[in-house]
Structures are given as structure tokens and as C-alpha cells.
Image (cartoon, rainbow, N blue to C red):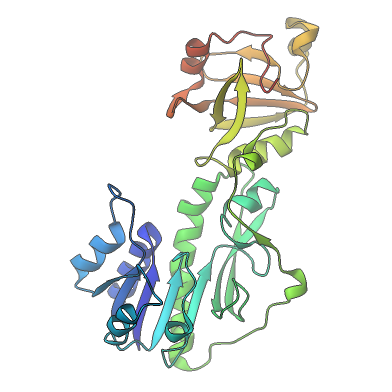
Length: 314
């Protein structure tokens, strides 16, 4: 079965390497052009492995279609291509087009689907392989594999340590089912469909008056990118690495002023973290992004002159 892999950068590289290693007939790879100066690992991997590379600059053009059909594809495999395929490409292969999505479809369709479940405190997500059609992430399910979200997972650890390895395995299994002629097509329950777009700057703003768990979920869901947003003395920064502690130790109340015991108040500063109070616990900030650079909490404290009793987000 001749497969055209349509993907991007790291996930595309991992899938391509695995499929070549297991002896699949890779007809070609297709990817969107990357920004100037960005290393295109997917393209480099394709060239290294001797797999034809096709740039998807305008997939609706006759030029692209002519080059695509020369690959003689029997199956399209989509993984984070982030564009809508024209029907002339979508329906061309004899086995059609399958797609990968990092969520338990029909929940969390759309973009940033690794980030949103963490922000909302979910304890599990999924790698879903589905039959792609003109709708966004709404085609019939081929298979779905649950992925556990640990209490301290960030979007980075979830994606790189769990999602990507599981995605490659799920794609392999899906291809096996198609080749055997037993791949299912289970319609999604679209009454449960939820679509999310890109996480915006507004979505990342920390409300220190919210429960500590909600704040922590926002921080870890947006770590490493785009980061959870707050400010001190009109200087905006992003909270990255952090730790959650529910409840309060007695020394917090004894050691700071009444003014500090408010949402966003800094109640302790150590060489390892900045301790910030929330209504039902504290957030230990260990690393931030400030002036476009990641820095440890201690370095940030010195940079901005932070002291116990100061407040964030005010």
C-alpha cells in the first residue's frame, strides 16, 4: 500500500522514520513550508531516507495536483498538516485519507488539543485515528487509544513523552487494520463535539482569585508555550515551571503583612521559587519567561526587585 504522509516537523519525522523502518511503501511526504530560519526536520528526514518530498504551498493548484498524482498514492496519512485538503487530494487514494488527532474526539477538536485538556483539568486524553472528510476532525473513528494525564504533566511532557510515542503506535495499528481490510468506521457522536481554536493571549491570563488548582492547570497547560501570563509593577511575564500546594502552613500567616495575604500576594521567596498565594493554596513559581528569556525564579526576583508582600496581577 503506497502511503503519502502529510505532516509537519517533529511528529512527521517520527512517523516517517517508524513507517520506513517497518517496511511500508512510502510514496512520498507532503508538508507546508516552514518560516525562514526554521529547521525543517521533516523534510531533512525525507531526503535522508530517500522518500520524495512535496511542498504543500498551494494544494488546490493544478501544479500541486499534477505532482501529487505522480506519487501514485493509495492512502493519505494526515498528522498536524494544519490545512484543509482539497477534495481532489482528499478522495484520490483508493483507501482514502486517515488523520491523527491528539484528543478523545469528538471532544477537543480543532487546534492546541494537547493544551486545552490540561487547562480544563482533564485526567485523560487520547490519540485518535479517524477517516478524514471535509469537516474538521469529525469523520468516523478508526481507532482511539487513551492517554493518561498525570497531575503534574505540562503540555510539553504530555506531548513529547506520551502523545507522540502513542501516536506512532496508533498509526501503525491503523495501517495494519486497513491493509487487512478490517479497519472500522465508527461515526462520531457529534452531539458531544467540541471545537477549540488556538490558545490566545487572553486565554493565558492568570486570575489569582481562582482556586489554586485552576491556576496550576492553566500554568502547566501552557508550559512551555505560550506560558501563563501575569504581571508585576506593569511588567508582563510568563509563568512556566511551577508546583501546587493546597492549604496553608501557619508560617505564611505569621510572616507576612495582611496586604500580602490576598490573591497573587508573594508570601515567600527562596533560592528555588517564589511562593504566591491563592484562595485555597499556594503556587510555587520556579521559572518564568521575561523579556523573551527563560530564567529561574531567583534570577527574576533580582531582575525586577521582587519582595515578600508584593503582588502579581494587580
